[in-house]
Length: 336
Ligand code: AMP
Ligand code: MN
Ligand code: MN
Image (cartoon, rainbow, N blue to C red; front, side, top):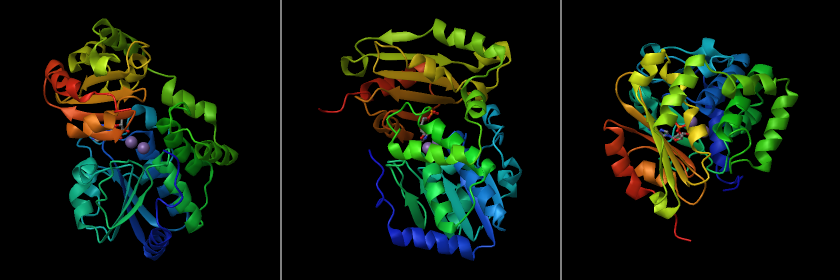
């Protein structure tokens, strides 16, 4: 999909600008278990707003409420408040990278009571759950919409804001490798780098560091990886899982295993890759990736999750085998 300048009507941009201008306090939220785009778009916008004199609170509705280790380098974390300290009835609330109300977790009731709820997102599956929607499925990341809104508000994209926005852009384009890598994505990266950020330091934080224990846990995942050549409509399925016991054995926190899918999905013999990750409470988060022939967002949405055609996920309380039994039949190639 290409970026569509008309995806958000001009009148909606104008209304968003008017709402933000009129507000003294803006309450920001991103999706639970935030990734680089969720946190980067929210904190980047929050920092730019604060520099313009607004009072800003930002949060995400996770029970544990910890910023994943690999995102702790992002500037603006002093904007974060725990869900319990979040305004119960915000006059202006804005959500980032969340495709549904559910994805706000503990902050969904706050969003339900907000006088105005501005939804900033780029998921095709966005359910338009707010009072105003800045949603462009053609945007490579939510940070692209934030950059456009910041520009319309006349906010300054300084080095810290740029670092946050760049983190979201490179996360969602997989370092400009995924199909979301448009000319607009590269052009935005150019503008952000010109603001003075450090691309190599950001890349190292996001992808090129792990505690030693990660290698042991990755080893466990690779030990039990399965290739099903007949899977995904004969195009091949590769999958594995990681238990909390695997992590406990090596003292590895849950937020360190995000990169396992990037190892699994490289297999030539498989169109679709799946990694099932057990969290500390015994629930399972399922990551799916396709190379383009299978719409994994459709499959994951059918199982209560969502995402993008080539990268999607859902949660499960079943065993890995049971979860795979319900996922397998949904992994069918799109009709040509
Ligand atoms: P992940 O595999 O966790 O990196 O997630 C890939 C993409 O799938 C994310 O960018 C989200 O858009 C989406 N996603 C993952 N888990 C869920 C979920 N439980 N519900 C909705 N969307 C999800
Ligand atoms: Mn996200
Ligand atoms: Mn995103």
